[in-house]
Every structure is written in structure tokens, then in C-alpha cells.
Image 1 (cartoon, rainbow, N blue to C red):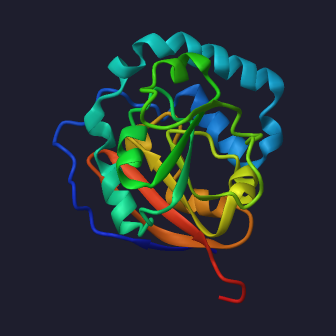
Image 2 (tube, rainbow, N blue to C red):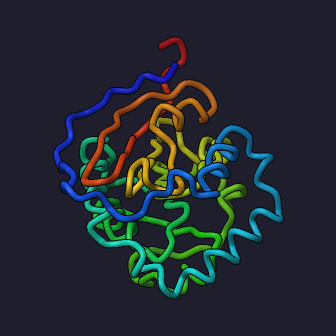
Image 3 (cartoon, helix red, strand yellow):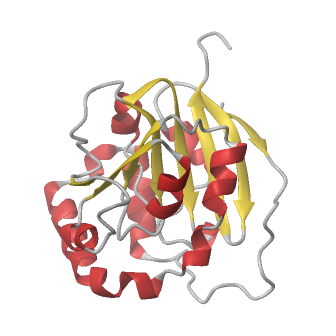
Length: 217
């Protein structure tokens, strides 16, 4: 069972919730299915998702507000993510989250399946790579942090590219209202082996930072 410690909320939400409620969005089911079994992510599913986000890209920055990402520094600090770390952001989109990651980490790689999204991301923030999260073009044990902001979880690939002692940063900008959402405990349980860490909320967001538990812990 995952060992999770829930931290006090330092950035409380406004009284008025956001308009979007993605609890019944079709991609929520995809999120759960892929986290439980990556075989659900077929070439057809990848092509459909790519087409969808390429179409959404021109208006993406109008759909998400910058304030939805203000909890990222809180997650990085209280998750004890080293500033010297190499961070891979999977599902980086147009870079709204990359701004905060690049301000914290020594180096960030911004990766997304959608070429349309990457084309609109600021080129000076981080190197941009088009790739599928189900097949990351990186060597085993090659990054210190994998950041997933409103992104599908491919557990085996995340585990493969993380160095020993590495961490997963999982961030859902609208918490349970985010179409692509998993609670912290479900993220930890989906990853191979035993994982633990800390979790909290910030504004509307929910987040967790997870690390592999030592064998025998």
C-alpha cells in the first residue's frame, strides 16, 4: 500500500469553483484505463488524441488560466524536488506549466504528442520534443523528475526513465474537476513497485510528489 502524507493546504481555493467539470469527460475513462493497463493505449487512440489536441492548440491558452498553475512552485518546494535536477515534462502542451518548472529546475525537457501544442510553446523555456508518453525517447535511468500536468500516466515508462531516487510530480490543475485526473493514491498504486510521498492542494489543483520506497521499507 502506498505511503502518502497529506500536507496542509497553503493556497486555498476561491469560493467560486471553476466552470469546467470534467468528471464525466470521456478522457477520464481513458486516464483510468491507461494507468491500470497501458495496452489500452493503441496506435488508434494515440492518433485520435493527437488530432484532438492539434485542433485545440490555437485556443489552448484561452482554455486554461495561468493562475491554475500557481501551485506548481508549492509542489516543487514541499515535494523537496532539487533545483539541480533534470526534469522531463510529459504532456507539456503550450508551456503554461513549463514556465514554473523552468523557474525551478536546472534543466527541463518539454515533451508532447501534439506538434500543434509544441509549436505554440515558448522556444526559450526548454527543448521541445514531440513524442508519445507511451514510448519515451530517453534511456533508462536518465532523468531526475518526471512531471505530468493534466497528462495520462504511463507507469512503466515513467518508472523506466527515472533515475534511482527520482521523483514523479503529478499535478491536476482543477483537481477532481480536471478531465485527466487521478487521485494521489491511485497514481502511487499504478506505478511499478512501492511508492510513497506527499500530496496536497493549491487553489483548485491537486498534486503529489512520489518516490520509490526502499526495498524492505
